[in-house]
Each structure stands twice: as structure tokens, then as C-alpha cells.
Length: 329
Image 1 (cartoon, rainbow, N blue to C red):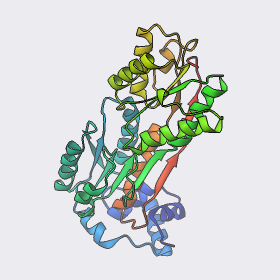
Image 2 (image 1 turned 60 degrees about the vertical axis):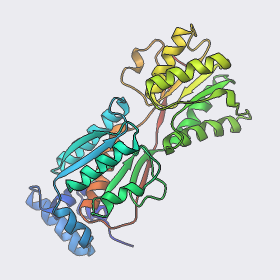
Image 3 (image 1 turned 90 degrees about the vertical axis):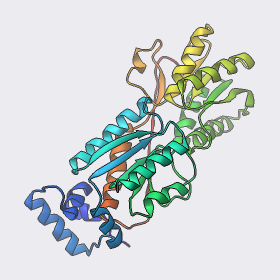
Image 4 (image 1 turned 90 degrees about the horizontal axis):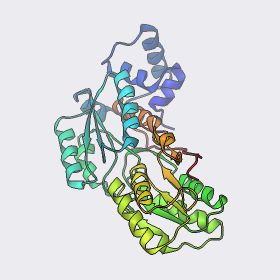
């Protein structure tokens, strides 16, 4: 088994970020902590990935963060988790917004490569991993968040989207709802496809048929959720609605209000991504709560491991999400 930076951290009873600081020599570390880390390194025979570490030690102490929608509250807490963890390890962060545009994302990846950034946290706008070669060829590590890139040789941090969507749909079924609609996000992303799959699996497990009339697609944006709900209400009569992200939920709520639909009497509503003011809505919103800060923290720890030379196989962390039940169901 390959010894990783996390193994060293556990042996020295310190955080992986502290091990990274000691190995990189970039930030002042207490003498006793430094001694414990170096002793654990020697005892366990830990060897950083030499060529990759050589490239990274010439890099800046800046991490790039590329997200798909800076206006989405989901990313706010996640980015804070990245920034706090990076800052404690002596790194700064810069934030870029791809707007779900692969070409715009590619330009930011090229900037990160040209500036020889220490690493990049990426919420990918596209399913293909080919464009990551811009960074990986230069020894710049990448960690994806919220979405995975199939087959990409990079670490990732996500939630169990399938189970979260399954739990949300099952909750509606247990409330006696049978005509359950979904506003599904971009199916080219693992986030969109896995949430739709979880919805369908819950219906199947309950012995209910999946009716295509109740499946509408949108773009993870407020306007998309609004338009999808308007379209849904024109052609179907759901008694429940599951919107698979926070902005589409807000768009759906606006459309339901304009159409005079009572919540939850006429249509029960579950959103995905709990928002800080969900309890201020009337009725308060039932929603899937993601550990957004934790996603950012864990992603940055993985990045720090790679910067320190950890050459172990890619790791994929899947965190649980929790359904918070309120008045909308």
C-alpha cells in the first residue's frame, strides 16, 4: 500500500494541511508539530511524488476556483470552505465563473496553467475531461466538486445525489402524493443525471410508473425553473414537485404563485439545496440540505495532499445529504 499524506497526518496527530506546510516549507509551523511530522515521514518512509512536487514548488501559492454560477447560493458556502482551508495552509484563492460555458471554462483553465497556479478546484461545465490536460501536463492538480468527470484521473468531492433525490421523492410518496413531477437539471452533468435517476428509482420502488409528462428539463437557473414549471402546468396536473436545485426551486415557486397553485394543498414542493432563508418562505420550504462548507473543505484538503506530492490513485469522496422537512410538504 502506498503511504499517503493522510497516513502521515494520522501518525503525527496533525492535519494533512500541517503536513503539507511542513513538506513545502512555505508557512511557519510550530517546532513541536514540525518535529512530529518529520518523525512520521521518516518512520513511514513517505516519499512525495518527486517530478510533480518539483513543478509545484515553482508554482504560486494561489489556488484557482472555477464554478459554474457565481450567483448560485450553493457555491457561496462551498467557496468559503475552500478559502478558509486554503488560507490556513498559507494559500490564497482566486474565483472564476464559467456560466456553464465550456469555452469560457477552457479559457480559465488556460489562465491557471499560464500562471502556474498551485492547484484548481473545478465545478465542471462539461462531461469531458480532455481539457484538463492543460493543467495535468504541467503537474497542476485538479479536484472537481459537485460534479464528477467520468474517467478523469483527478480527485472529486460530491454528495450522494441519487440517494438524496430518492429520499426526497420517497418523502412525497409517503405524504400520499402520486402525481410527482421533477424539474431535472442539465443531464450532461452527473449532478443532473443522478438526481433524475434517484427520482425514477423511488417511483419504481413504490410501484409507481414514471410518466414522461411529469419530467421537465431545465438549466439549473431560476429562469429555467420558472419556464419549466409553466410548461409543466400547461400539460399536466401534478400534486407534487421536486426541483433538483435551489435556483430552479425559486423559479418554480414563482410560477406556482402566479398560477394560483396553493402549497402544499394543491402541490407539495421539495427543493434541492437548502438556502438560508428557506424558513422565511410561506410555507417554509422542504429541501435537501447539502454539506456545502464541508465539500469545499474536503476538496481543498485533497488539493493540499496533491501539492505536497501525494501520488496515490484518485480519490472520490461522497458525502451524505439530509432532507429537511418543513411546511411545503
